[in-house]
Image (cartoon, rainbow, N blue to C red):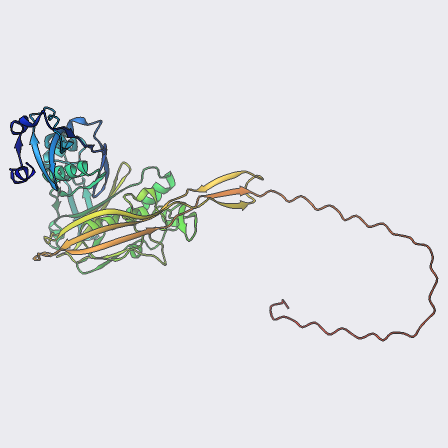
Length: 470
């Protein structure tokens, strides 16, 4: 019988097995995927999909496999439980499958998938077409309006990835998207320099920043608005920034210096350098100088996409290897900061994957710093703790007229960072005055007769160590 079953077709109709019902029995193994929340990792952020809350996205059905040796044969029981059949091993699996239309609707409701720019603007009464003006005499650039973008998700590919995740208890999926930007009306003088269309965009979110930090971000971003990076030129963030003095409008805010976090003029400017880094990274431009922050800062999520700068030591640089000049536009919308690069597309393809998190380390115990600026024993937390880890992003670039992607790995190592707590110094109690010892008296004693004096041998002079102070 076993040989017959091994040679039979992989799909067995239940009627063929009915005659064995009285003689054989069955054992079941039941497996259900436990993943209820799947993180969808987009290039600009992570979005969690709760499958219990959005139950219409996933359908569930049972599948039965007859196991014979190392082979498994799917059997159709017309949604009825199989008969008890002695001597055979069955697998009953509850499979969760993604409904493509329901998933597409959820993505569109979350504004993660649009089919056209018209859909993006469907709820707006009037949309102003972005225009870029240019004054030849002053060589100044003016912007009117901001760009619109359209993000398309490959639905079929995402459905396949989610089905695999559901069946293998995976909790995260990287989502590939295609971006489309609105057309821009550009002054002919700028078009002659190759500034025609949007070629890259970088964004970051600074929610939770103090008023002083936001002030510094606004002050710094204005210095880059309208800046033109000429063809073949290297962009230097510090070369444009030059100074963060109070005369230029900058205020004191927290910055990372070595093992401390302290206030200096210009704290928060790294939000601007990190955002322009993201634009250059997304555009596939060569990054020639970049360093991540010492510890992971929440303002720069997703982690691994930050670029710290410090005048006089740490800069951020990239090369303009596009067919023409690059024009930079900066602006804010709510808590989001934008850098837009205008230029000429050269048909390079850029694929970005990440972040890949590894080498996680818990933050060490808090560090207490004694100070005289607080009342004795009082505590003031001046810095949060941060776990350490490594974040990697992979950037694949296929140059124009090439069939091969060039793969780059961009690692960021973040230190485990202790919380810093200031503690008011407790005064040391004064030492008690020494008590004089009582003077003892004794009975008179007889005086010994005088004897010859004993010669005194002088002690040798001490040898001076070369480590003693003069």
